[in-house]
Amino acid sequence: MSEQPRRKIAIVGAGAGGVLLASALARPGPVLFDVTLIGPKAGRGAAYGASDEGLLLNTRAAAMSLDPASPSGFVDWLNTFRPRAEPWTAEDFAPRRLLGDYLETRLANLQDRTPGLGSTRWVAGTVRSVAQQQGGWALRLDSGEQLEAEAVVLATGPARPRPLLFNGRAEVEAYVQDDPWNEDGLKAARGGGEVLIAGMGLSFADAAAALWRLNPEIRVVAVSRHGVAPRIHVQGGAGESLFAGGYPAASSELQSRLSPTAGAGAGEGDPEIRESRLEELRRHGPSVWAALGQDQRRLFLRHVLPHWEAERHRLPPQLGQVLRAAIERGKLELVRGRIAEAKALSDGSGARVALKTDKGPRALTVRRIVNCTGPETDPYRSRNPVLLDLLDQGLATADELGLGLRVAEDAAAIGAEGRPTPGLFALGVLTQGRVFEITGLPEIRAQAYALAGALAALPAPTPGAVHALAANAN
Ligand SMILES: Cc1cc2nc3c(=O)[nH]c(=O)nc-3n(C[C@H](O)[C@H](O)[C@H](O)COP(=O)(O)OP(=O)(O)OC[C@H]3O[C@@H](n4cnc5c(N)ncnc54)[C@H](O)[C@@H]3O)c2cc1C
Image (cartoon, rainbow, N blue to C red):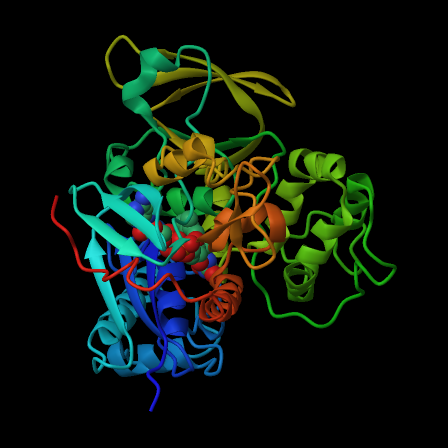
C-alpha cells in the first residue's frame, strides 16, 4: 500500500484565520498535513482576544461557524459549552470573547487528534523572519527557535491603526492611545470628563461603550473626516439592488448609488437602512472592486469607503441602542473634521485639543485621545517583523494601494520579480488589495478552505530537503 503524501505547513498567526486553515487542513483527504501555527495567543487576535464581556460580535452567531458544512457550529458550541438561561440562537450577537474561546477550543481539539492522520501544533511566539531554503522555508521566532516547513501561510490579521498625527502630539503623548483594543488604556479615562475618539467605525463604537461601562458620565466626542457613523443591524425585507444595472466603473457613481437618499426605501439619515443592503455589499464587494480601475480604486478608498463601511460593517442592535441613548443623554457627539493640534494642560490632567470641523474651529479639553481610525493595512507601516523581513528580501511585495500584499488568485504572495513566490501564501486581510471583501470571518473561512485545496496540490518537495517541523533550538 502506498503511503499518503504529507506536507509540512507553517501558519504565521494562530488567530481566526490560522485556526480556520488548520481546521480545513485536518479534514480527511488524499494529502496529510503536519501543521504548525505560530502566534502569541491560541485562537485570539485583535478581534477575539478581548476580555471585556461587553464587546460583542458585529455578526450574528449564525455566520460564525468554523465549519462551512455546519452553519450552526458556533451556536451549538455556545449552547453546549457556554449555556445561559435563554438558549443561544442563530440571531444572537455573542460576546467576542466567546468566539475566542470557541477558536481556542478548536485549536486544542486539533492538537489532540489521533497521530497518523496529520497533526496540528501551536507554538507560542512571534515569527521574526522567514528564509527560503532548499525544498522549503526556515522560520525564526523571537525566542530564537527555528522551524522548518514546505509552505508558509501568513495569517497575521489586522494591525493596530497608524499612529495619529497632529501638531503637538509629542507634548500630549501621555494622553494618546493608538491601540483602541488596549482595554487597560481606556481605564485611564475612568475618572470622567471628555474623551476624544478619532475615527467613527466599529472600533469607535466599542471604545465609547467600554468607556461608558467604566463611567457612564464620560462625554465622548468622535471626530472623523467624513463624519459617517456605522449603521445598525436590523431585520429587513428585500430592497432594490444597487447593482442591477451592472457594476460602476467610476467611484463617483458608486458614491451616488450608496448615498442614503439614493437607496430605495432608505429615509435620509436613517441609521437602519435595510439589512438587504449589507448582504448586497458583502456579496458584490469583490465584483465592485474588480470593476474599478486602479485610479478609481484610489478615489474609492478616499471618498467612498467610509460610506461603504458604514453600511457593510454594522453595529449589533444592543450597541446601536447604547450609542443612540448616549446621544440623547448628551454624552456622545459626532463631529466631522480632524484634530489640528493639542497642548498639554498645565495641571497634568489631560490635553487641550483644537479641532478643525466642517462648522469651523472647535476647542476641547480631554482626558484622553483614542485612535479608532481602523487597522493599518500597509505592510510597510505594520511594524510586523515578518512582513518587513519578507518585503526586504523581495519575497513578498506590498499592494500598490497599501492594502496588504500583492497576491495571485490562489493567494500566493507575489515577489519583487512579479512572480508568485513558491510556497508562500497570505490569508485574510493581507489579501485585501486583490479581493477587497475579506474582513469578516465568513469570507476568511471561504478563503481558508480554498487555500487548503491549493496547499494539497503543492508539488512534492525535494526528498530529504525538509525533514521535520521539529524545533531546532538555536
Ligand atoms: C476589533 C475587531 C472586531 C471584529 N469583529 C468581528 C466580528 O464581529 N465578526 C467578524 O466576522 N469579523 C470581525 N472582525 C474581523 C476579524 O479581524 C476577523 O473576523 C478575524 O479575526 C481575522 O482573523 P485573522 O486570523 O486574520 O486575524 P486575527 O484573528 O487577528 O489573528 C492574527 C494573529 O496573528 C498574530 N500575529 C501577527 N503577526 C505575527 C507574527 N509575526 N508571528 C506570529 N503571530 C503573529 C496576531 O498576534 C494574531 O494573534 C473584527 C476585527 C476587529 C479588529
